[in-house]
Image (cartoon, rainbow, N blue to C red; front, top):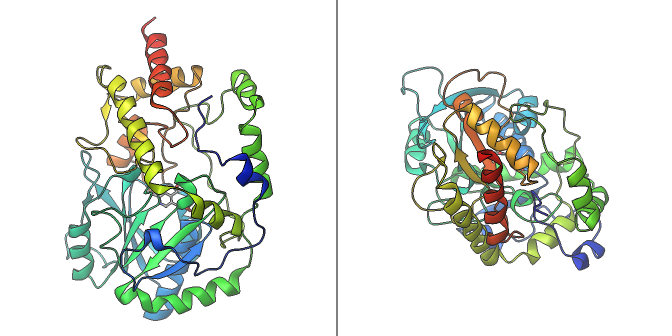
Length: 371
Ligand SMILES: Cc1ncc(COP(=O)(O)O)c(C=O)c1O
């Protein structure tokens, strides 16, 4: 059975440590500079909120955050609670690089979020230059990225990773602070300590993963395919329980992960899928050229929404978990993000899958479409 996410081993599931992790546990494999300050949280959504709050205290006023139009609204929920003002900026429809507003247009940002979509490097140099012109901090959003690469995770004043999205762990997100952002570390740490000592529930996650490792999961999927039932349907944004700490279980699973192997398998799986996808008229990879170092998903751009919906339903029928992305912010009603939301289909390529298994499944999807 093709799962949407990688699963831990039985041994790992049966020996998970309890409690919260240390905020400043050593994140060696994500550091690009030994001077970086590291904070471990449960999710990057909380990192963003803590960052905004610390910056408001430092600047003595509310702050403006430049956010790309193509982003999921749920991940902005904690940030919106801080009272920060969000300014959505447009993206180039071909490369998803920011189209920075004219320097004299509108109020300048304090924080600028640059997303490396699905693991592909976005335009960091231009983003940093834009930030420097406005005395803003650059936040590299690496929520879809496994680890730093020569082009990712080195330029940002703040770098956010969401390990829980790419590794088999219940939670876990790393916030790295450097240069002038380092001064925000003590305030963020104090804020986190004052907020709550909770982490997201580990036991419920472990039970779900155990069931997914048994034949019950396959039987259930045959009766009712998992995931969203409709390509255009979005989950509604909901308030998030205050569980900003990383769990000790997450950190031990993250520690045990072989990142080299994870990266290689993700690349090989995405390449295998691309071989089959390349035969479909009108369908193309969202990014031209080289594969990302460790793709989060394989993003495919369909010719139009009808093709995306047909492919999505055919994938569901063959139990290949395809996804649409994201639940756009309500402010975004036109432009590149709405075009991408209606035409991009994500296919899984994570480290637990096999290239032949993915090729066979996608070939069955195409056969289904041609009859
Ligand atoms: C681009 C991007 N940034 C940030 C986030 C938030 O990440 P997390 O789930 O760790 O809060 C998400 C979540 O989907 C995301 O897609």
